[in-house]
Image 1 (tube, rainbow, N blue to C red):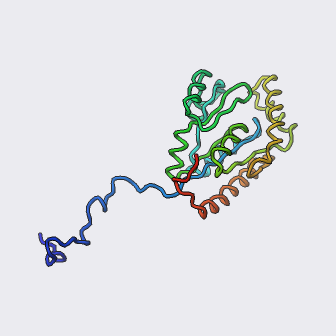
Image 2 (image 1 turned 180 degrees about the vertical axis):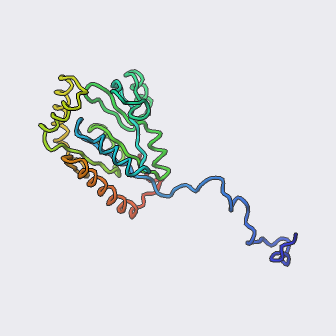
Image 3 (image 1 turned 180 degrees about the horizontal axis):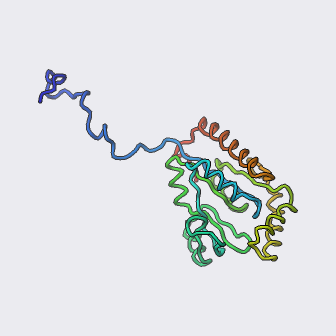
Length: 232
């Protein structure tokens, strides 16, 4: 059937009324022009950062949570690929030597690290990525990804932290003492972070965490860091 709107046009005249099918139905979505945000949560063992992160993810399912690799054995209820990727020390070191980790650290006798490829992919797709990592790893992130937003979760006191560690009944006495000694060093470094939240009450701490991320989201949108300038 002849289109009456284009019949009078010369044969060699391109019609702007009939776009190519590829323009109407692109096969690939457009690449995001703005990189995602890298959000880092750090704090001593037993401070409750895992609980806060769990609640944050429940409220904000669009956040991508990066699952860490560790050499420590699974605790009751933990699942492979959900809580951690559990690996032997040999496997972990092979991954680290191959450049497959964004950051890594040894904590309480075990290795912990963040897989690099998944984080890079999510950020380049404009997806915000949440990391729950140790102090040494957070310092590596600060050097490698200076635009990362780093938040330190602190206990009200060391005495309260010790009470929480003993109450969860997941560690030996030697492990508790090692974690408490490590916590003192971590608390001394809290001033290195962009934000400090004292987790005296989970609901209050969660509200503070959400307000920080909301404020940073507005600031980040104004900066509009292009994907090609993302340093991670």
